[in-house]
Amino acid sequence: MAARSESRAAGGRHWLVLLLSAALEATWAIALDESRGFTIVGPAIVFAIALPLSMLGLGYAMRAIPVSVSYAVWTGLGAALTVTVSMALGTEPVSVLKIVFLAGIVGCVLGLKFAGDAPPRDPDAHAAGAGPTGDTQIAPAAAAPRVTGSDAPASPPSTVTSTVSE
Image 1 (cartoon, rainbow, N blue to C red):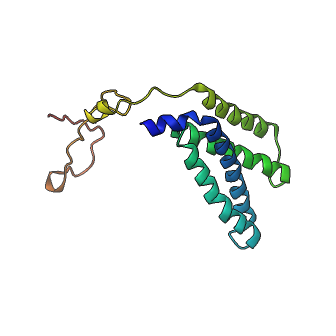
Image 2: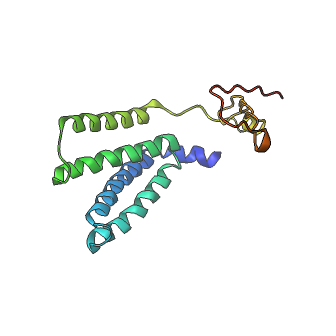
Image 3: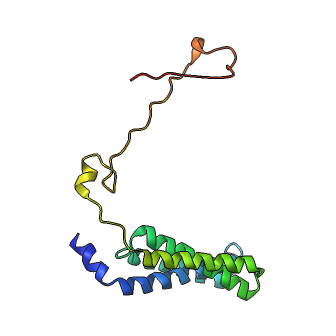
């Protein structure tokens, strides 16, 4: 737990790497398209370099930023950057609705950054059968008995009701 706390102190650096990683995600996505199924060498090489660097950056950012936030930021900004660059290059048509929705993605990502962290998990509660946040888990309902073989009706009834006893 101490290593997790120490890495949280370096959050600014982790956020910067996450933003650069999102830009690399847009880079590899555009390079993948430009490679035309890996038939054009230059973009295929850019893809092969940008993809692992993007993943490494995401992994580094996750050392200090919760996965729920870091992954959403990475995918959201990466997608928004991909569409924005594609529109700037002329490979994607520009529309007012696209710009509004892109602004919505960026706004939501910013909201995640400033929303704050979730309360810490209680590892003892999880070991005792509680959920990952300490809440009690509810067991799923038992399945209805399956009728097979000679017990099966010749034609399906219009309404099926079943009682399950424990």
